[in-house]
Length: 108
Image (cartoon, rainbow, N blue to C red):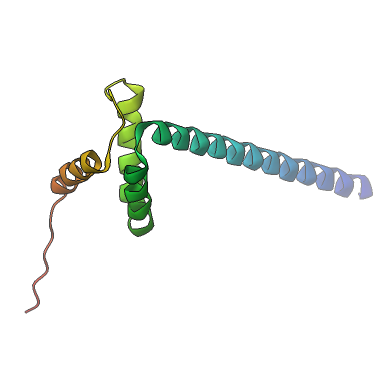
């Protein structure tokens, strides 16, 4: 009976350790992806455009992530010949924003 309890404890401890290792690996991979994204964005955007994107990220993180992913996709596919400036980023933002539906609620 004592041996069974020890065996159960050992198994449970091993499961917890595996779970912690998997979580640590996932966090490291997420950090590596984040670094790679930042490097790509640094090479694609001018400082002014990066500033604008950072401000958008503070206000609307989901929208900023969508823009970042679009820019990374364009960079990786070779569709960007030069760095994107603030004016070009504004144009991209306007194109993406106009695709969304406007929902208006009128009070009765």
